Image (tube, rainbow, N blue to C red; front, side):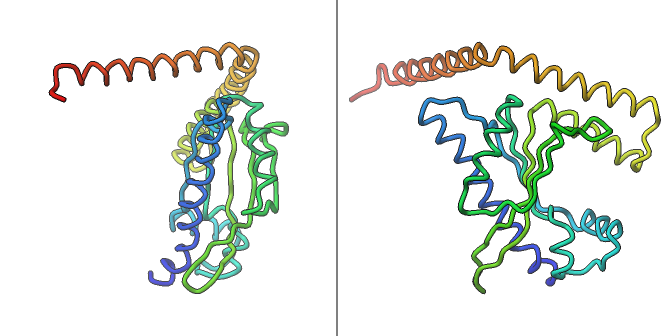
Length: 224
């Protein structure tokens, strides 16, 4: 187990660092009073059981090795959620311009959806991690998708797990229909994005004003 802990340590560090950096993008947009294409960010290191499944799929030894690191590029995984489909393009553009990571592969499953209906934008990156033994560059995967796409993908993943990838035809057909419905929802929301931005801005301003009023009231009657 010590070998696996040592092997996975840089991946865990990469996920922590990248989550902080990518969440920071949202904060920077808010400081400029601009629409933030990043809604929220999640991340994880692939569990050993999932790594084992991948080694079976790729017919490679289940052991820490350079071969495993190269053949399973999503051991470290980040997911960026966006409100609108157009935001995905903005996020991808920002990632392409960064100097702290290198994009080695892009997979556009939004313009070219999978047969199942799955939509998302996947980027494989090289990311340098500073360790006590020096710099180690690892591969990581960043998935960028809308909230609707993520909801559908989460449901599909659960059903595939339940049926071990062999979905009954009726469920598969309904999933395909649901994927199209989710994408139509994204398209409809994009058509009224300006109104949504104005409403969200108004709501945020209202909450801040209400918070200040409560804080001011809480001081009344207290000795100076």
